[in-house]
Image (cartoon, rainbow, N blue to C red):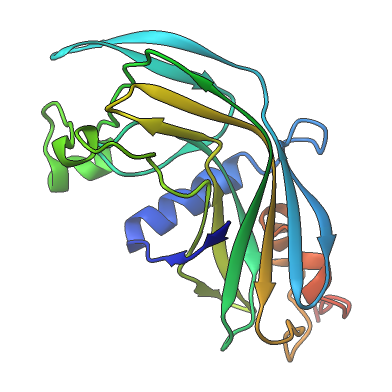
Amino acid sequence: MQVTSVRLSRLAWSTLFLTTLIFADQSAVNNPLQIEQIDSHQSVLHFQMPAFSMGQVTLTSGVYEQIQSSLQSTVRDPGAPEIPTSVTYLAIPENGQASVSVEILASSVMQGIDLVPTQAQQLEVETFGSGFLKNDAIYTQNDWYPQSPAALYSPAKMRDLTIAPLEVRPFQYNPVTKELRVITEMRVSVNFDRELVAPDQPVSPLFAPLYEAVISNYPAVVTEEVARPT
């Protein structure tokens, strides 16, 4: 399954990055998204679903079901079905393109789910309002939401490196049939159309720990020792 790159607003990009940074201290054992293979042309990640459950939440329009999971993020689309996600960051070639493919290794479908729509967070209230949000265009569409189980968002320059958020979405919801697709295991491959090279200058020791914490393929792009303070 091929996946196209997705543009992301500056606010949403920053929110994703801060969320990823907060959860960056998860141990390798607990992190559901693990690197399988990295080199200068490709990053391959393996996702294994952590335990989750279905709970209920009461909003002004009624009672909905909600996915309760340790996954650290959600698809930020207020009014759309609330979908937990796992996010990591990848270094990508500065002037190159990246393509994403997904191999689903195990999945199942739950029936009769009335999934809660995502509500606006505090920083989004000015744009979306503080009232109940439900995107009828999505909730009346007989299709999976989100359509793809992974998305590579538009990149940004972060001092030494160009990085892009990779969001893995192990849940897909059909609001017409009320089916919830649960992808318990998948492999996500990100391929670059040109070689990923190290920065021209050694990375500052102030930034190296941050890169190591949030950029999954950091070892593939930084082959030089970090700069030493003078």
